[in-house]
Amino acid sequence: EDEGAGLAKLMLSYTWGYALADILGGLQEFCDNSGLAPESSFTWICCLCINQHRVAEKNAQGEAVPFVDFQRAFSDRVRGIGHVVALMSPWRDPEYIKRVWCNFEMFTAVTLGDEACQVSVTMPPAE
Image (cartoon, rainbow, N blue to C red; front, side, top):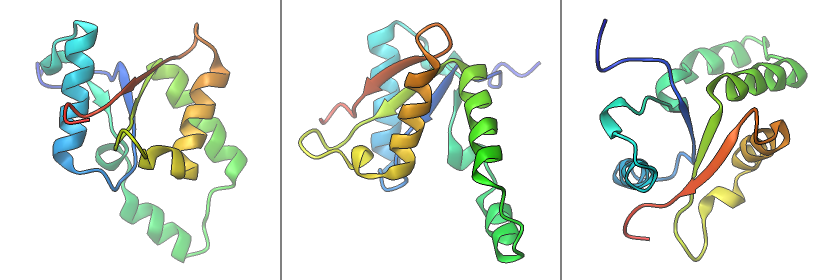
């Protein structure tokens, strides 16, 4: 068993425009504030877990997944992980709330309810 790998207990909800340092800083800040060890806080991050090239290829071939199927699969993933951590930055004008997909992620997590999914908000330390 690899100590550096495990089932995700957190799902990072963020916009792709954030700098890597802000993403890492926000996750570190969340772990520090929550009393979690960063090295064992396995986090599902879209850009590392979804092959976007395959998604684009399927779209180009006209094989788009119907939204209702995608919504069900995404909701199941959020429920399975059980904790969404939303990264907000910058403080005065967060990009997160301007992205429809981020709002959909937050909506999905919140409508599942506290027992199915916990929602936390974090920011990079500079914010």
